[in-house]
Length: 305
Image (cartoon, rainbow, N blue to C red; front, side, top):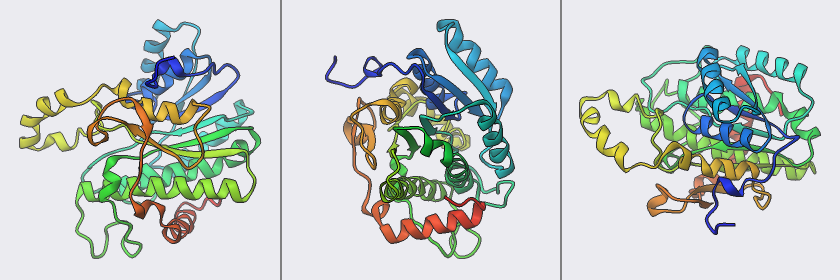
């Protein structure tokens, strides 16, 4: 085995069932492909079924035996989340890994169908509801995992409980909202791990971030003229989506991973390199904020865990 963790370190996954949100492109695509190659049944969950089916077809070209199901899931619509869970439970009896990968970044201000600021609504609240609605299946599957994908942007995040949706005092800035949503991912991960431990549930919650990865996540930033000019240079400095996906893949399948851990690239400023344990900022470990935010998330989504 190589000292640096790569896809060759992924154990056999036959008999396991995994959900990857946003599985049709970028980090999610690479994760679905890697899991299917190792024998897992993978649910490729995405907003656009046509894109999901195309992604599945591409993966099966190189892995004809791959067991991949495409299912519609719009995390910006809680009704869609509920329909997804209902259909999943009708067709599956276990859930070994829930990889909450899907996300949007630095979008202009808009609201989800349920009235949430879009980045918090999609990146956290949709996944919170999905996790909660699948919790009975997560609990009943021994050794199951929930993996939440955060970002280095969590370091600039701030949870303003008086104005989470940027409707009152805070001036909306796309990256400010993104940072908040990524800090939210970590607060949720650590509180979920405490929940598992307090209730003696044989599951773990883990987080990961991709560093600087060449995906379409930052496409909204590139709409600005200066960013259009810089984009080719910036993208040339970034690692591939396949490398960027390794931290979340490791968090999902490495047997040595422990609950409450956080994985990211080991290179300079955690921008690139093989996946290793990394640290999040102290605000991500604020237990009072985590408990408060959990309660707020339950109230906003109508989903209790």
